[in-house]
Length: 264
Image (tube, rainbow, N blue to C red):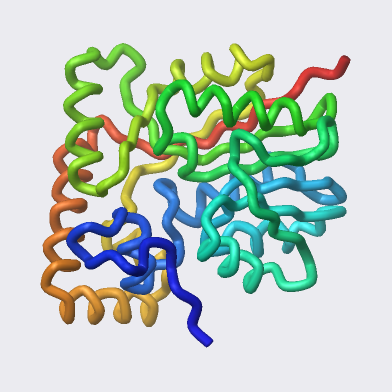
């Protein structure tokens, strides 16, 4: 049985961009692609760890986490449809529970690592801080918080340009995207008590042919292209998203940060 995607009741013109891409067959929906996800998970040192993933979505990162032999895996997902997809992906190897990323319902100091991808970017600054505080609460001392998000560059980018980029992204992907600079991401984490351990970047090339093939394979990419060609409204949306990404390509990048909760 094929499970419905989140927002599946919406037409292609009004569906959030990442779920539209999923409807078209795209399975890697992270700004830095599969390569940056794999690097982040390696840097987070997950072998033998109790791992919590916030908003696992399709469950693609969950399966990558499980390949690293954690002691346990739990995904916390607020969307019922996404929770069902994630549960299918992890099977008996993990647990998916229903909850908000800012209020997981998990015990304090119960995890060694918390992972979140393309989650914080789509929140207001206040909600970003709430989610980061929840990750800090759940982690044991010495625990790692690993994120993979969209960033703005350079660090001294003026506020007017930031606002323009955020508005055009929101208009294109139908989600309130608020990427931050490297310094802004780091300051949010350190304000919550974290120590920054690792920062890495990758091109934001989500809809570029080379990245598509690297993430989805030749057959997967061909399937996505076929589906785009069959759906005029979806094609218009994808072209608009790609145009927005290309317009701001010098100012957009994918960022990986692994932060650590201090030992007490």
